Length: 359
Image (cartoon, rainbow, N blue to C red; front, side):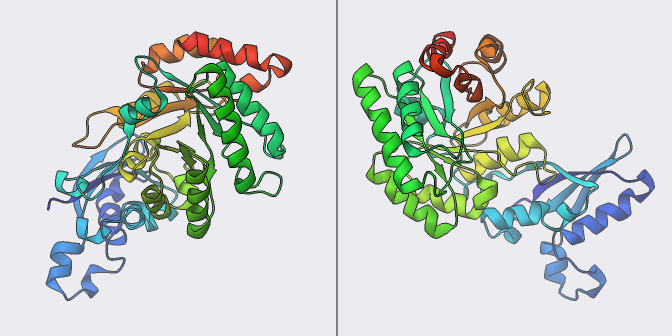
């Protein structure tokens, strides 16, 4: 099998490029001096190779060839081989990764993807609408009422805020059945198909328990933060959930991995059907080009992997809907949370304005 090619940006003098590249290759594969390795097979087949070095402005880019066998075909070990030890070096950033076609067969990617989400939601030919239940600290009854209002307005997906986990004020086992029931009542009243995506969080045992609860009460979408639960647990959870999964970017900025690679390409590889990311012009610092690159990484043709649905979010407003549709196109889910909740007693009316602006 061909090698995985990982691209790194190193902020260091050009004169150090060759030495730094060779040191990075050793660090990201065998983590020891090559002179101390007597096994010719390890030197030939396991040690990462320096494929190219390109100069830049105050930095340089390095392509490393990483042996696929070192990943064990497992998500957490793949991240370890791509950016394990070198994530502790503040001058190193993981910029991009190229995977051999044969390697991708070990990671099936999204099980539903864009078309699967459209089938579950019944939405065709337009972007999907999404909002969030906030704030954490609210009692279950309040969250259920919010969800009922959003579903009456015709919003396609009502998700938990990612801060809603399994806290005492709204435990998963109480919150999820109540919110799902409230959305079901609204759907029956309107003939709509609003989906509820609760937050799955915690360790493997907690995630399995939450999967059983969600299945028992008819939940048809999930929200998970892969970097919080761990990418290995994220992949295993997908096997427990026969529903589309939205990936939340929380903690995704803690490592210096380029957002289009992590939120677009790697989350897609690990199986996310939709990926949430901070839209430009909101309360985060992502620029427009970065956001467009995330959307492209999520949707562009990539071997046999289904496309992932981009979900721009973070301080968005109803007034920006036309601009977002023009920028991202129809295969997008637009997420507006706090700006709707700020409407107070006009929440239903404002939510309907959001729906109308998209439709």
